[in-house]
Image (cartoon, rainbow, N blue to C red):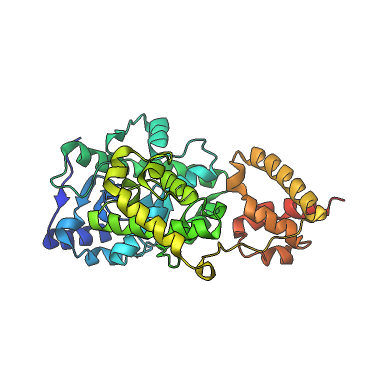
Length: 375
């Protein structure tokens, strides 16, 4: 395969956008630098038409607005594999909206494929072996290596053939409408810029007491500032596990810090003073200012609800086996728990469950209601 062209100036991009607008179907992907920068950004866009692949360098061009109309045009089908992250990034970085989506990963899930990663799917259907060396590459670096360019092109080059096969299979088993509903929902996702205390987005923070939470918040604020200064991901400053260990143990001197599991001597040497200062600030916070971890109201156990949930899970297992799908794709646990609590007895009551998708209600509704009617 010859190397695809990389567009690096606005005039090239304008002509290319006009070319894309004439296509019925285009395959799209992107590469970002999430493993190498404080704030990840889109570093490369890949577009495949049936007979050609073209790469776009947003770091060189800057203004990609001419691509907006074609990406938002539902008359041009957009093929992605695992579009969720891409859609969020494209809207965050460029304000792009995606319409006319066909996500080959979602199609694979609805068809019951056991492995849904792109490398696995391309290997299964076409015998293609993707070079995984570049999955963790720094895509912000220029010039791009020849191997990186080939890797990027392979991500979209086969999606046209793959989508054609998957669509035929979806239509043959009556699941194309399921996929279309899932695609329409996925088109609406957006990047979430969270606010509030940083510990609310930290795994296992709910295991800490208020004093430890205060220390953790100081540590997270320090780490975030250091990552911003170095323009690197926060985990490259100090990983979550040792950070949690520091918050739990609240060491007051270098020797105690060295005893925290996962803290290396080099990290103690480099960051020890700043880490201990964050601990000190957290320990000095007045009792009345200590942050509580928000707890959802504990629901009282209801034996009848538990019994309904158990029946629903048993029904889901049998139904998923018949459909040849993963049970969690058929209907997830959170939805089953909501159904068990609400205990709908009619189709109209099922419709009141907003999170239940139309295809789920139509395909699974009778089974849900019959399962709930069992004495």
